[in-house]
Image (cartoon, rainbow, N blue to C red; front, side):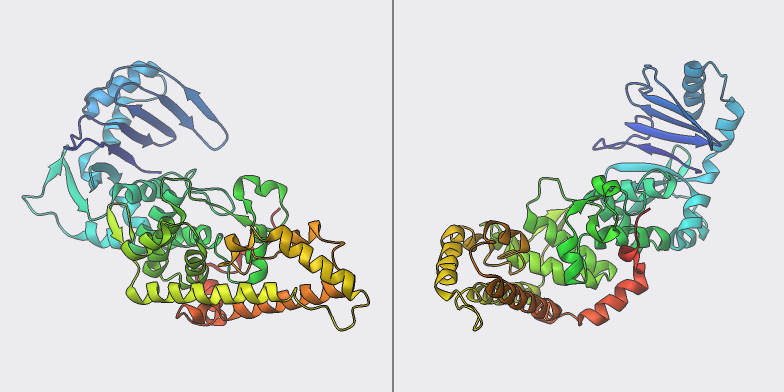
Length: 416
């Protein structure tokens, strides 16, 4: 990595008063905070050593930084000349997103991003704004996106590929800005993470039940998603953000599942979010009027499908030999689950699952149970097959080809 990044979250950023500073030269990586030298790591291909030290660092110059690092380590592992050479302002740019500034090594950023390569190729005007001797470039992006994006470019241990776990904020920032600034490798990695939670087949949708933190205990990548939203936004709010992100980067294959989830959300505040939108990364995010109408229509169709599934319990199979007993069993199923049905009426994939049979294995004869299971499976598959059209999207076959072209068949591979 060739990077050092100065970061400040002050309302009026001062590049000489920083919250954190990442600096690397060769195999030496340091992290210095405003109030203390928190950690110094010496990295090579075979080992990593960690050292802790406390020292005030309220303001610094490159010479001052050298002094601090040499004082911490006694100059044993770090020569002042190497730091100064690496800290040459001519090799760096200061990027600013929101109230955060990042000192980046321009050749590395240009090598990863064609947009930044073109940006840095233009000669700087004589009156260019400088920060600590480096040209300042203001990005029209939020720091919540820029921070994970830049860190992923320069820190190989951050934002690892699927199935390693990540966070919603990291995935969002990396995908949105990798798409915007044309970093293909990072864009694909982020797309895989995003897609892991929203699958394109009903079988994989039903199978995704395990967060990536437990992936080592699984054998198939079809069962894993690598991120979850744990912030303060409600489900409908973060789904709005996901829908906007997918549309922005062309990941249309996840939108049927996203819109379905929005239509299936039963919480009272969902309608308000649907109409007013939400706010993320400093931006107001609202669905189009067409998408809002489709989601409301989707609720109706999803309710119809759920009702159709439950209607399969009304009549015994013509070949049933114990119709009286099975009729009693049907009444028992409805009575025992009447509180559950309103909760899942908007989600035909949860209104009745294979797990629900566990409490009712003896309620129906085997003939009736097999018939009902078969009919429910057909109803669900038919609804799934037509889900994209319900939300004004291309057929699954088209969406699947788009997905494979973008990320390949990554979820079909077996984990080692």
